[in-house]
Amino acid sequence: MPPVHFVEPLYLWLLLAPVALSFAWIWRIGKRRRQIHRLLKQRIVPVVERYTLFGGLAFWGMVIIACALVIVALARPQMLTSVTQTAGVDFVVLQDGSTSMRVNDVKPSRWQRSVLWLRTFAGVLSWREERVALALFAHRAAPQVRLTSDPNALFFFLDHLGDESPFRLRDDTSWDTNIEDGIYWGVKMIDKDEELYGRRSSAKAFIVLSDGQSWSGEVDRALQLARARDIKVYVIGVGTIGGGFIPQLPARRFQEVEAPIHAVLDRRSLRAIAQAGGGSYFELGSESDQAIALKILGDVQRSSRGVLTRQEEYADFYWYCLAAAAVALGFSVFLLRERQVLWWQVVSMLVLFAVLLT
Image 1 (spheres, rainbow, N blue to C red):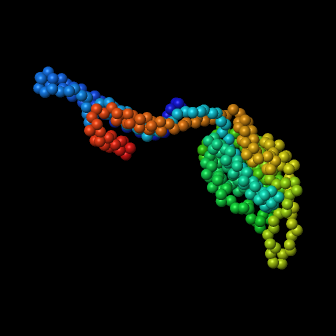
Image 2 (cartoon, rainbow, N blue to C red):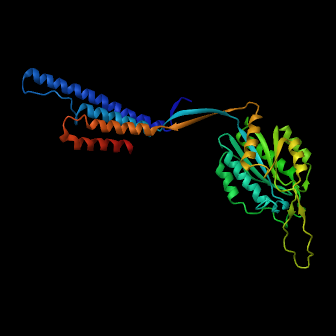
Image 3 (cartoon, rainbow, N blue to C red):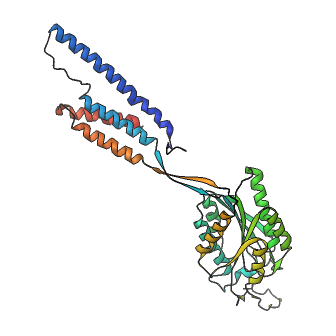
């Protein structure tokens, strides 16, 4: 891209108006001078030679310059300020929504704590070359947000998530955490995106947010599928080693009250999954949420095999054009030869600007 470009280049066609006016003025001045010289030769009347057309020549010259600057400002010129090389990354977040995520050993609960981290992660991304998808999983997986570079899509979904997982307690009879199905759905979401929009050369990674409690499914087989697609799997542990009791529904009539279930953070299993997936293991509370997000983002970008995308930053400078136009108009007033015609010259100038702006 050139160092200067215009957001609305079609407005530049309006520059033909002040150019045409300039040529018309030059022709009018030439015609008037010829008339003046002819009258002087014939000695008909004494004539003081002046270059006028609705006022002084210098005045209207500055007005034409100001009009041209306003037109350039309408085209919204932008100047290149910086160029960076960034790696495109596609993230699929796999959020554990199983029953154990209702435990409140981390405040306000494991589920809400993981959602808070996800908001921080979304705020860290530039959303220029990064895309994010989201799927929830418990005893089954459910994709929620397709791969998107629009942060509003993700935040809209997060804003409508409740304080508890959408998986209902009565439906989750096994209370399993089927990470295998979650990874499979993550791969399907990437495949569907490539089917619709073509294959991207961006790096890809899964981020698993879970407490590691009660894994089910063939996790090793799912991880092999991810490795075959060159997808790294990062795991973020949510919870504590001490754990807590899972909130239970009130017992139904004639139903025995079940003993409360104690759920702890299964750090060992989560570390094993991260290691097998080629990623890293993190734990909420061990460091700031932003630090974890930046580490994951930086690691994935460094492993993108040199696939970089050029990012150009532009800054608007149309205000400088408007300021220069105002200076030109202000200066033109001091170039008037006859102050008594100032009022209708200014009116003519305002009418011309109104025509251009409309």
